[in-house]
Image 1 (cartoon, rainbow, N blue to C red):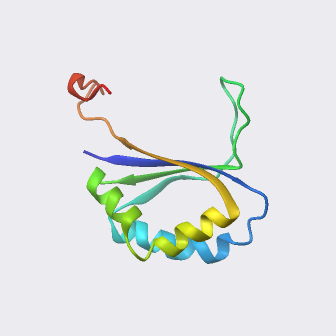
Image 2: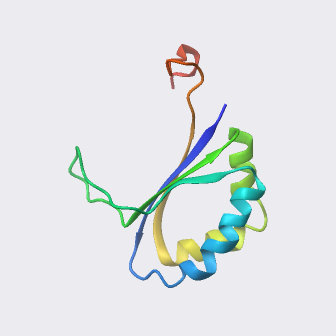
Length: 108
């Protein structure tokens, strides 16, 4: 089952991204992942909380592959770099497991 890492970032200065993005993209690919969303124009449809500076959605073939990417020792220094320059939230969520997207066994 696919798994997704969804992140939102608030950043004051994006210069650090030049050092972060290329090796991070390589590590995502190394673990079978790919970008589905990286930045882009945002439009609020509901809610009141401030929108972040950017959203990122990564797709991995499995939850285990996503965890392997995040826990890869090569990613550790990049996590620290990101945390130095961005306020970030990351969540790992399972993808749809059947044609209707209804899997009663996975509800919370």
